[in-house]
Image (cartoon, rainbow, N blue to C red; front, side):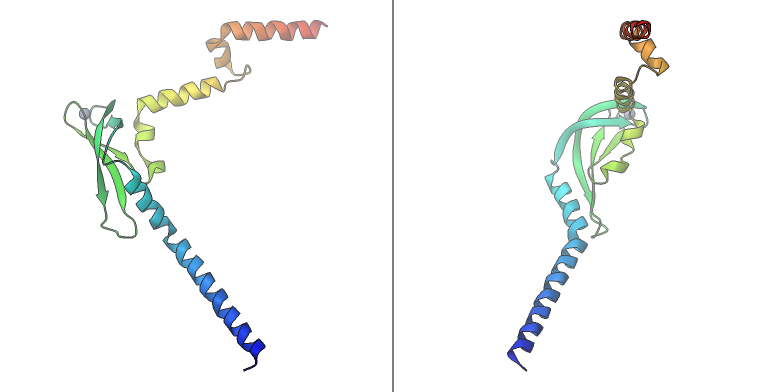
Amino acid sequence: MSKRGEEKKLRARFEDTRKKRIAKYEEERPLIERLGTIFNADRYATTDFFCNTCKRDCTGTGYRQVLTLRKWLPTAWYVGTCPNGHKMIRRITDKNTDPYYYQSYMVQRQRNEMEDSFLTPDNPRFKLLYPDKYDELMKKDGQRTKN
Ligand SMILES: [Zn+2]
């Protein structure tokens, strides 16, 4: 084989290996990230829980529990106990689907507060929450129409 031909073959093989390496990395990435999340989580953590039995928010210490039954999908969460002895869970992996976020009254309150802080004067709640600010805005608006 000519020198040029050999070089071409070598380049192709190199490129092929590189592509395979990237593909393998992409395939393993979700697992690597999950493992990172699990190992970076403290063994014990003081965190906010919601007791599903008492229907109340509780702050307490939970210990990390890891499930590796499915090797490609390890799952972890914190287990805490409410003052009445009920088991409470907070997810470490799959945080975005943690039921806590729609169960907790505290989160709901924070969500409402955030929505209120984004209110614009055309929303009826604005007048209710900030009557002074509303009056001030309306006064200015009135002046503008006069001029
Ligand atoms: Zn409870």
